[in-house]
Image 1 (cartoon, rainbow, N blue to C red):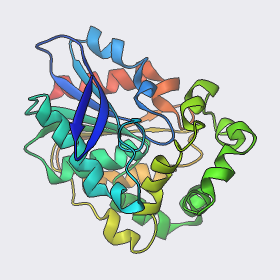
Image 2 (cartoon, rainbow, N blue to C red):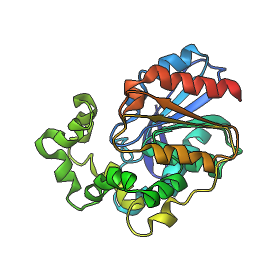
Image 3 (cartoon, one colour):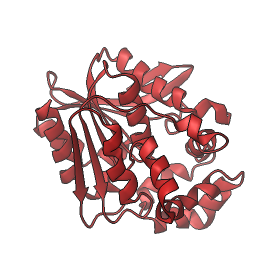
Amino acid sequence: MTIDHDGLSFDVRLSGPARGPVAVLLHGFPVDSRCWDDVIPRLHESGMRTVTIDQRGYSPGARPEGVDAYTLDKLTGDVLAILGHLNIAYSMVVGHDWGGIVAWHLAANNPGRFTSLVAISTGHPSAMRDALAGSDDQRERSSYIKWFVAPDAEDTIAADGGARLRASGVTDAELAPLLEPGALTGPLNWYRANFTGDIATKLACPPVEIPTTMVWSDADSALGRDQAELSGRYAYGDYRFSVVTGVDHWVPQNAPAAVASEIALRSSLF
């Protein structure tokens, strides 16, 4: 289905048992909501209902011009508006990569709307700040952001058929939509809007007081263990830290059973 909000048209999927608890699943860069395709059937089998959104910059009808259209308040506002359109008053929020940053902010700032949080790969923004300040490891892992925010990033990423992203583990099928004319700018504007200028203020996030699970994979080249483990400092409710072994950054695609199990477990606990 498509849902209109803020003059944009978002591609949204609502599926699963009609009376099950709801989980909204938020993708990251550079993939769209299809990254959850192997997770969703497992959640449905456990009795859960799912909402997936091709977020701002990814839905063909939701690609506004200008970097300022991709600030975190816009990204979180999209999710809240879509859930409101679907008449979903309460849900679990799950996010991977950039979707994890959005999920942390949603959970921290709207504790009455979300029953629990599962963050995958991406730790609490304050934990990321601590990890960047504490050692060279996360600074080195995050160095790719410098070329993501560059004015010519679209050309760099698209070069040789997206060879750099393919080398990181992104599949040809996931790359194909990004390599269409104009498709890369919106996703890259997430970085330009939020990882330039006063980054600390832009990403600032309160502690999360709802039940939270942090899932991290030990072969992730972009997001280290420190930022994942330190997230516990900023989760004031029931907190679980789960490590998926031998899996790279693309956890929903490459460890869907483990991801589904963690989501279902968190749903059943609260």
